[in-house]
View 1 (cartoon, helix red, strand yellow):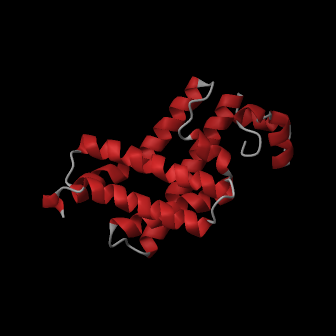
View 2 (cartoon, rainbow, N blue to C red):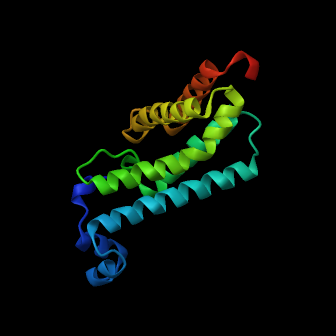
Length: 177
């Protein structure tokens, strides 16, 4: 999926990579769509676990520290799972059901941040939801350059964290400071 895209996912290759028969893959994933949805769910679980473990080890004292922990968790997940599933989180591809699931999972990953963003910045919950999407888009733009090889991971994490912090600061209401 990472190397050749979603349309190149074939059950025979998945079975061979997993060291199982094609029939066994079909038993758990009756369609290509079900397989891709399983990949998305696995990505979300892995990212949530990695971020949770990082946050538990270094309870964030600021939004910048929290943002860095989340960006690092995203990078760790991409390194472990490949960039293909990450691309599907905001998919606008030919399969509307996979695109809807990708957006739902992305919303689920971002949801815990929205209330925190609203509280820290002083914006409404509706504005916090928009700001959260802006943060994701900015982070994706930088991380894309990392997994394309234009930036090192450390550069991507630093720049993403700076961008997230700048967006949050730009939207912070004076009373919330």
